[in-house]
Length: 270
Image (cartoon, rainbow, N blue to C red; front, side):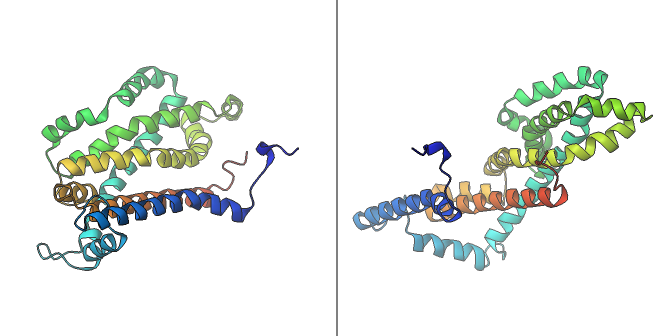
């Protein structure tokens, strides 16, 4: 008797099984939407696919009468700019601080408790403070992302540094390497692919903080647009925007994964 645990699907079957849940969700949505629209043609809760496509087409391909800009493009660029700044600064901070507290005991004793403390602070509770200190501009939104993911990313890098075999550190010290050379030539090359993985793991959290900040105080952005149209119950805009954000998150994660594989082909094969 062949056990279920040993049965591996073929590539075609694997693709079909991966798409199956999405197909079922689409079927359920279309059926529910048709049923509600048949009962009430003005129903806004589950708009038809055609209405959602038409609404998104206007936002994507027709200039706004108020601003003269393409709304979807402008919202996307604004959000991606904030996300890139927040994640980029967080990654740099995590690399510098995570490696330092992982390799230098005095810094570990001094800084690591502070990092652990901030990683446990509910970041959304700091949002009013950030708006008071930094105002309602771009800085507060970027700082929210940094405070939300930088401590977590730093802890991840610290843990990865501690996993590097101590034999490597001892060997390079016997060859005369100083602390700076050990960090640059031994630790950092092994940590960089793990840093990219840490970015991938915290991207979802970064999106949450970004959308939350934009929803409260912004004049453009994906989160701003969603919360702007919710007052009109415009589900034909909200649902496509959510799907668009999900697609962007998937593409960023995919690009980072490919970048990691190309730049560090040895990573994950040890």
